[in-house]
Image (tube, rainbow, N blue to C red; front, top):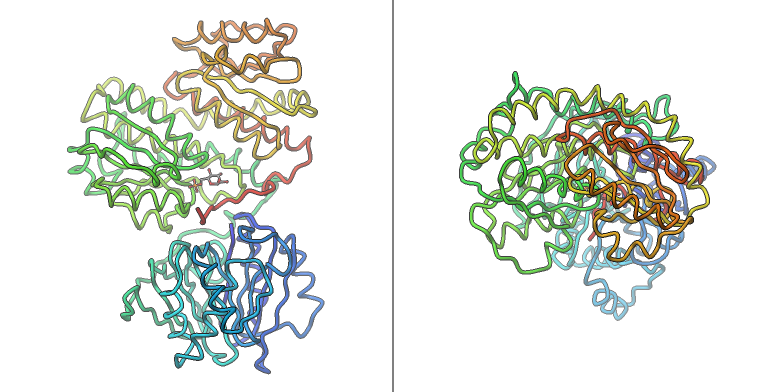
Length: 611
Ligand code: G6P
């Protein structure tokens, strides 16, 4: 979802801004643009629909398009179609240029008053009102920094903003409220971006703006005022992100690379947290002990794939730890009344740590009386980690493919660590803790074995080439895994896929079954096996084509209309993690056959920073 880069230097910033935009491509976008202030005091702009590569090509043809101050943007359309006119930067009266990530909720009223003042609009975006407002305030106030401070007071909604003006060639001004923005500090130049990965080849030193901050950036200085207009110092963080972790390497797609990185990602997420057959108490930080001692229930909040991880954790928390757990998608949680249980821990789960709904839901949870929060997050330097009392990082490494894979499995690992920590204080016995830890340690090897199914899965993927619908079935902890499998397939192959708890088949979805709707079932060898087998028969009896991922101990046998793919036997405790792997591979292989844009599926964004 929208990405921003901007910079101010003693030399041309064009290359750095475009390079940064490329590194932000994973966020999802449908048009791109940049504006530069040249040495004649003109703001020059180039915008194009489609890929950053197209913009780059056009920029390279125009030798005039250079400047020491500039702003650049990838746009994911919300208000107005993905056209060149709607692409950012927006410019007002050749004096002010601006890029924006977020949504301005009061754009209609601002537009009406600006039209009365004589401003003319050239786009259908909510953003354009901001550039006019800055221009208007620049006439009323002395300088761009003050003008932006005044402007943000007049905005309702979420934004990160970068603004330039030919009246002040030595300043880049920026602001942040509800959308991410980082400042990368360099020698004799400074840059800003939506996240650290965009600037990691330039610097390791970053300032993370806080909510409501407005900053003035020059080639050698940064001034920041907080939400109350007071000058503040913000800490400089050293980023540990490595620049090759965001390279594609030998893989054809990031998604495939990330699927294959799971053994390492999982072992990195376990590293330093286990000792012998136990979880180390220090895993959650020094304040955790006291908080965990008071906790008797858990409220999990997340979106998308992260929500599915939360659903698995509910089974684990109640089944293994004896702790009551509720799970809700963030966009629902934040807009309803709650009965707030005492001593309930809010757990947010997010790969990016920037998902607007998850951040807002956490804020809301605190307002209505939830006292303690823990976030499970893959980005150490994200908004969510800063807003939470406790942080448990998944060490999956940067995830670029829009369809989340290694983030999901590492979230499950982190959640299992929560299950142990809370379980130790509740129903978890020493024996069970030892068994869980043993199984966690075995995961990297078992995931590698599951990855070996790729060749078989590639063959069965053909069956989906002409299908329009698919149904995924699972029971217990494997119902959310079926949901995740269906989500992966629909996201990247555009096949309509739904998941059902297998027991619900006869209450509706059975009516859909015919030879045109393949049914995918996950069949671990557990106490629900016999029930699942009956459900499989219900499908077979109606002529449905079945593909079953099964533990060999289930005795499921291949026959006409029933393809069985054996998954090496695993303890039921970690089976959901293992059964996820073939479903990820299936979605990937089907998408390859269909020729879709696997890493950047249409209409989707990696980091959903608007609600
Ligand atoms: C988007 C992504 C999904 C992701 C969801 C939640 O929809 O495309 O892959 O699961 O956001 O993102 P988060 O970063 O909060 O886990």
